[in-house]
Image (tube, rainbow, N blue to C red; front, side, top):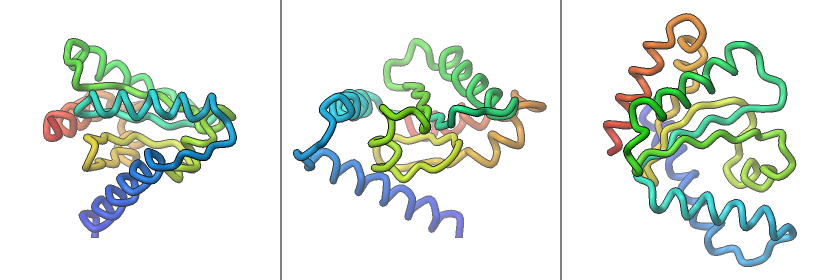
Length: 146
């Protein structure tokens, strides 16, 4: 069941990427430019660690963001093929990104351009009290996708 969900999520993410790269009609040029930069970054990057959150974040949400960002910076900081992206889904400038990828809440995802590893549940279980376990999971997921 989990593999089917990961596969389905991966297919949907890839489908949105294809549609957005082919869509030439936009209502907001600045959002399209930001998305184009994001897509260009992904193309030059092998693995991206995405942390999605809203304006209001609890201590656990903040811990997920901190642990994931620190892990990418500390462990993969010298690897140009690994990127950390922090997106506030409540920010109006990220509305198009949120809509295109159907992001509705906080989450932690590892994406290699083809596969998506959803670490959200683990991240929220471990970030505040067992950050080393989350760090190890992020490292493992990134290394598997490199």
